[in-house]
Image (cartoon, rainbow, N blue to C red):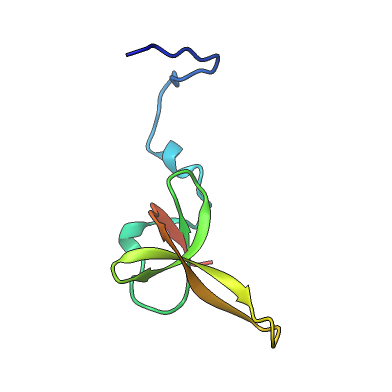
Length: 93
């Protein structure tokens, strides 16, 4: 197995706490254990890298939803786009 070298630091030195993980999420983010799984309102879901997406629980998995514009009427509506999400935190808005 070849050894790869990098000019970037790969190891964090110093004390690490569990709070460091939550620093990438907003203050109102909650763990997925408290997330509602029933309902028709999209929820802001956060992935492990801190990226936020709007999604809903559908058939036991989290699916991303997006706003689409109706070309004929100009109205916007929300629908699932087929992408799965692996969230670690959520927020109500």
